[in-house]
Amino acid sequence: MLRIIVVAIGLLLISTPAFSADVIVAIDISQQEMVVSIDGAREYRWDVSTGKRGYRTPTGTYKPIRMYRRYYSKKFDNAPMPYSIFFRGGYAIHGTNHVRSLGSPASHGCVRLDPANAATLYNLVRQFGAANTTIRIKA
Image (cartoon, rainbow, N blue to C red; front, side, top):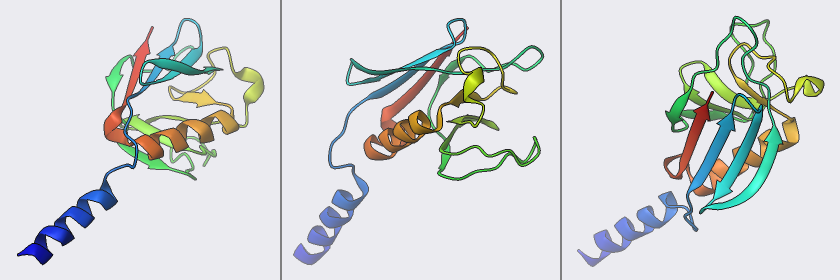
C-alpha cells in the first residue's frame, strides 16, 4: 500500500509544474498589441498583427488547446507558423517572418508575433502550463 502511495505522489509531481503562476495574454486588436502578465505583474508588451480586412481575429477569452514548436499552415501555402499556440479551432498565436507588418492588421485571423517573442510566450505557457494560461482578445 505504501508503495502505491509513493508511486502516485511521484506521478503527481512529474505532471505538475514546479512553480505555478497565472499567465494572462491580453491582446488588443485596436492597438495591435499584446501584454503578457504573470501573477498580475506586467512582464512583456509586444506589437502583433491580427486579421486584416476580410479576415477576423476572434474576440473572447480562451485557453491554449494545442501547441507546436514547428507548424505549417494547412490553409495558406504551407506558411511557417513557429511557436504556435492554438486557442480556437485553426486560430493561433504564432511567430511570423513578416515582422515589418507587426503593429498593423496583416494576418488571416491568427495573432502574429516576432519569432523571438513567440518563442518566449511559447516557453512561458509550457513552463506554467496551459491550464494556468488565459488568452483574452478584445476588439
